[in-house]
Length: 352
Image (tube, one colour):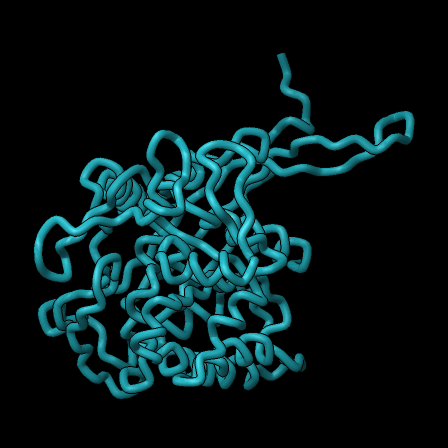
C-alpha cells in the first residue's frame, strides 16, 4: 500500500548550530543530555528521535548516555575540537483547513540535522584568542565538564591562529547559536564577560566586513540557555522571585516558563560585583532574534516519582577532590531539547 504523501517525513534540513560558553558552562554535558531529553519528552508533545550520523557522533551518544545513566558521572571535558553530526526526527503541530474550510490541528513529521563544533571553553578567553596563551587547570567543583588537564598534555595539531580561525569560521557559518550561561560559576568567577566580548568582537568584525552585509545586527538566531537550574542557589532565587511553575504530571518538576526566562536571566546578570550585565545587554544589542531558556542537563533529584524541594540536589559527594561527585538519581533534563526546536522553528522560515 502506498503511504500518503502528507504522512512522509519532510526532507532533512541541516542546521549548523554553534555552542558558545565559558569553561564550566556545561557544553559537553548539554550535548550528552540531549539524547535523554528526547527519550524523557512527555507524551502528547511530539515524539523525537536523536541519532548520530557518523561513527564519532554515535560513539559520543553511546558513551555519554552510559556515563549519565549507568556510571552516574559527568561526561569527560572537551579537551580538543570535536565536530559531530546528529539527526533529530520528530513531529510538530500544524494548523490546516480541511475540505470544509475548518481549521484542524495535525502532527507533521519533520527532521533536521545538528552540526556541532564543540571546543574547549578556554578557547573563548580574551587572552587566548590570537595569542595562543596556555589554558590553566581550574578547579570549579562538581559538574564542571570543562575542567581538564592543561592543554600541553593534549597538544593540538593546529596553531593558535588556526584554532581561532576554525572557531570563528564555524560560528560565522552557523544559522543559530546556543549560548550557555552558568550563573553558579559566574557568581564566583565573575568572568562571563571576559569569555563573551572577544568572540563577539571578532565575529562582528567578520560579518560586518562582508561586502553585501547591510544589517544593523548579526544575522544569527541565539538561544540563550541559563544552565544548572538544578543548583539550590539558582532554583531558590527563581522560586523566591516567583518565576517557577510546577509540571502538572509526575515527577512534578519545577520550571521557569520561557516567557519569564529573559527577565530571570537579566536579574542573574545584574551582579554589581561583575560586568555580567554587559553580556545580557550585548546579546540584545548585537542579535535581533533571541529566545531564553532556563535549563538543567541532569535535572533535580526525584525520589518516589515526585520532586521534593527539601531533597532536590541530584549530585552527591562520594570521595574527596573536584572529581569526587556523582549523579545521585535518574537524569531528568529540563529545557534541553527545546532550544534546538525553537531554533529550527525560527530559522527555517527565514531561510531561502
